[in-house]
Length: 292
Ligand SMILES: NC(=O)c1ccc[n+]([C@@H]2O[C@H](COP(=O)([O-])OP(=O)(O)OC[C@H]3O[C@@H](n4cnc5c(N)ncnc54)[C@H](OP(=O)(O)O)[C@@H]3O)[C@@H](O)[C@H]2O)c1
Image (cartoon, rainbow, N blue to C red; front, top):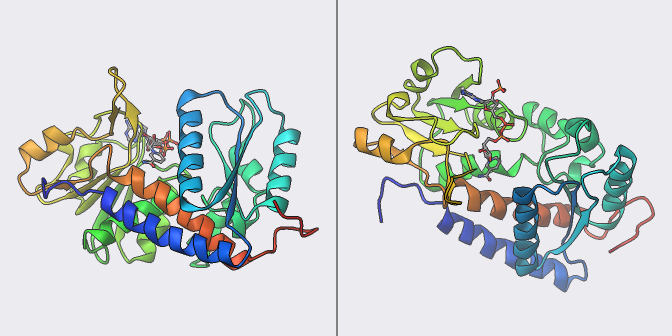
């Protein structure tokens, strides 16, 4: 195995095993962990992702209900689905993209924080910022878990995060600050991106532009975490970093592969969050105590 590739599959497998054990314990007590996934899109990638979450959840012993409202769903219908999810399951995911004109953060404010397993409610982000318990978006949490798993220290290191979305860049920045990193955040208006990224001890790239980050963006001993998932013209999955270029030009750089890096850890952590929510909530589902 190439030791310069920071694999995520073995960590994901460990997380899944632990999650399965915890899900079995909950089921034995009569309350299997449960998840609602609310989707309002015909986007193929998104639908594929929802099916993969459903399959993975079922394998681990999590009851998963997919509520597909279609791309013309109204705000009212989405609100109703979110309210019903909070009454009937332990955890809720609001799948992106949403129909045009519907504001994601406003809608996600309806997900109770204790069930917000993918950190979509802006309150969850605020709580993370204040150092209070909340679920972080699983991708942001996956970056930290991967660094820890590969024994890459975070405290005192200079981490450059490229991307400032609510799903990855912003929550990750809070998690990194919470681990005493010095953080620089770059985005599409950053002037001379390479000047910033070259200074990183740890470079996290979450842009959504295949291969945008190349050797000239990476310092000689950097660790690179490639969050990007883009579909190449041949249908394969590729990251935001041109890994071959980076590995060839700097002999000690380490990098996460795409696929097989952040992605599998993200899914595994998302489902662990579901079990954590279920452990905390027990048989409390909602106002009228209804269960699935
Ligand atoms: N592996 C996983 O599990 C997982 C999960 C989530 C996302 N992803 C992937 O991660 C990537 C990012 O996702 P996202 O949801 O965060 O995307 P997003 O919401 O589109 O945000 C992209 C970010 O990249 C910045 N950006 C765009 N072009 C740039 C450039 N040329 N230079 C520097 N910054 C630039 C944008 O800046 P502005 O803010 O200025 O527009 C924005 O902050 C995508 O490939 C997505 O598929 C993977």
